[in-house]
Image (cartoon, rainbow, N blue to C red; front, top):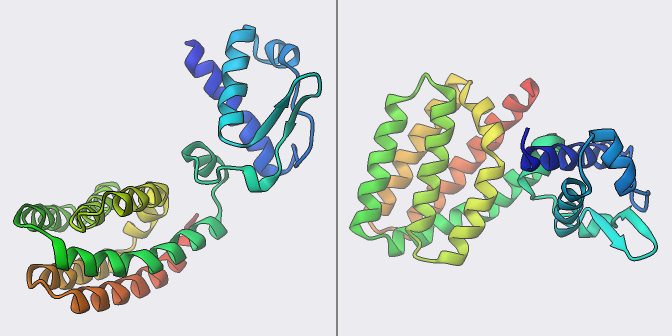
Length: 228
C-alpha cells in the first residue's frame, strides 16, 4: 500500500471519529507516535495526514500544546472526504436549499448569455439523459453535467465554480433519486422546459421553469432520502 493511501486512511478514520463525536471540539488527537504505532507507518505518513486535516480546518496543531480538534466553525464541511464519510439527511437538505437559491438565477443568466455552443452541448446532454433513463448512475452523472453546462452558459466563472462545487457534493443523493422512475421523468420534463426557455433567450421563463424544477427535486429528494 502506498504512502498516499496510508495517509488517506488516517485522514478518513479521524474525520469519521470527529463526525461521530468520538473526537469532539477541543479533544486531543492521538499523538504522532500513537498513530505511527496504530497504523504501522512512518512519521512522514502521519505528518502528511495531519497537515491535510489541519488545512481542511478540522484540527489545530500548536507547538508544545499537541494537536486538538478545531472549533466547528473552522471545519470545511464541504470537503469531499468529509461529505462522503459523514453525510446525512441534514446535509442534503442544506444542499437542496442552496440549489433552490442559486439554480433559478443561473437559469435566467444562462438564457441571457448562452451562446450557440452552450445550447448545442445542453441539447446533446439532454438527449444522453433520455437514452440513459434506466441507468441511475449514468442519469445522475448526466444530470450533474447538464446543470454544469447550464452554469457555464452564464459566462460567469465564479458562479460556475460555486455551482460545480455544490453539485459534486450532491452526486450520492442524485443517484438515489435517479432510482425513482418518476424523479427521472420529472427531471427530463423540466430540463426540456428550461432548455426551450434558454433557446428562446427568455430569462424570466427559464427562471420560472427552474423554480418549478427545484420544487419537484425537493419532493423527489424527500422520497429518495427514505432509502439512504
